[in-house]
Image 1 (cartoon, rainbow, N blue to C red):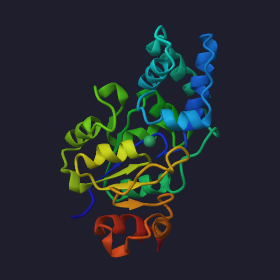
Image 2: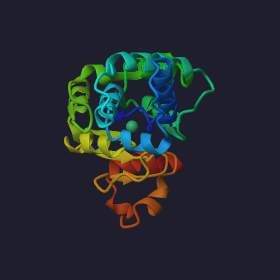
Image 3: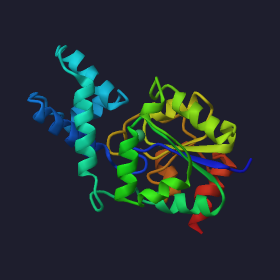
Image 4: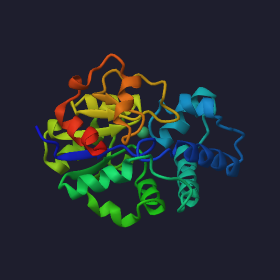
Length: 244
Ligand SMILES: [Mg+2]
C-alpha cells in the first residue's frame, strides 16, 4: 500500500522545543510570584502529562498548591514561549524540512496532530520554514481541538477524518511514548525519533525507531532485533529511498 499522507507531532518531533517550553513555564511562574523552578529532570517526569495546562494542574496537585490558576498561568506561559520563538532560536530536527518538501513534491498529503496550542505551531513555523508552509498541510489539529489529549487517540481521529484516509495509508512521526500510544490505538504506522526528553520512553510498538528522519540506518542501533525486511515497504520507500 503506497503512503498517501504524513502526520507529524510537533514538540520534540519537528524540533527540540521542549526546553524552550520549560524556560517559558519557569518565567511564567516567576512573573506570577510562584516559587517553582522546573529543572530538566523534573520536566522530563512532568512531560508524561500531555498539555501545558494539565501539566501545571498536575504539579499543583502533587505539591498541594490547590489555589494555582493553571489556565491563567498557561496563557502567560504560551505568550512567553511565542515571544521566545524567533528565527534562529532553534532549527527543525535534521531531515524534517527535506522530508516535508519531498512529500509535498510527491503529492502526499501533510497533517499535524499535536497536543500543543495552535499559537505554538504558528510561531515554530514562523521561526523556521515560514508560516506560509502551514498552507501545505491539509489538516492541522492542536490541543484546542480535543477534549482528551495524547495518549488518547482523539487528535488522530480528527486528522484521519480531515484527510479522509484509512490509517494504513498514513505514516505518523512521533517522539514520545504518549504520542506512539495514541497513534497505535488507531493502528497508524508510526516512526519514532526519540528526543532530548523522551529518549528513555518505551517504543517497542513503533514500526521504526531512528535517531532522526535523515538517518534511517540508525535503526540498527535503536532496534537491533529488527531486520530491514521487518520494516513496512511503504516506510522503507519513504525514508530509505531518500538516501540514494
Ligand atoms: Mg512530542
